[in-house]
Amino acid sequence: MNPSKRTLFDKELDELYSIVAKGEARGARIGKYRRVAAYILKIIAAGSSLVIATGMWPSLNQGFGIATLLAVLLDSVSSNHKRLIAEVEAGYAYESLRHNAKTSFNSKLAVLQAKFQQRGQDLTADDGELIAIQQEAHTLLSKGVSQIRERLAKVDIEALKELSLEHERAATAR
Image (cartoon, rainbow, N blue to C red; front, side, top):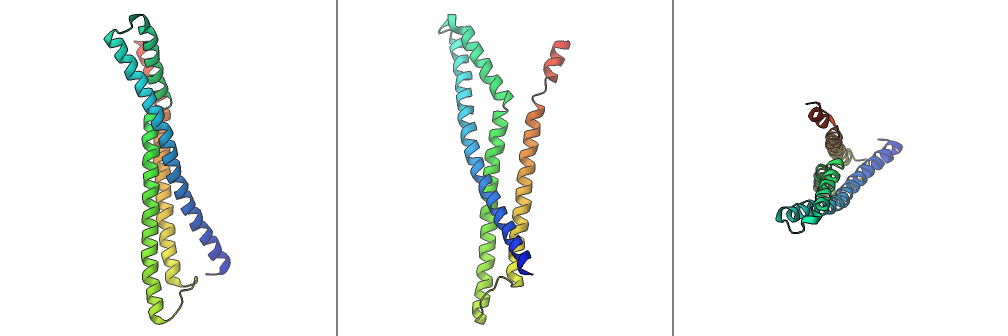
């Protein structure tokens, strides 16, 4: 493999590792924010419903009813729960992908280095076996990133479809 292609391949592999690391961090970060939003909305909806059900402050029932409705509306319009789950799953999937790619690459590299040391040789960047190991890591990362992105896109499209007012239109047409 000539040096310019080798450098390009190394950059692509580094970029894939970077995408995976960023995806893992994004899953954790967005999961944290959406989780907080989910708890707040759940507390508002459940707490307001409890206050109404117990008749604790009858004069405030309308306000608590509105708070419940708004919490449910915000959760459904933002598709918070579905997107929370999707982002957290993606974060874990990226973490697993990074771990698997790193473990596989390092274990195969260690075997290859030991083989070269037995021969009294140094492993070079142009060695075909090393390049094959790097290509396996590249393929694993590429496929994994693609699958995770496809899953996130699918969840996003499903969430957008749920914003349709078809159900409401059908209910008012009766």
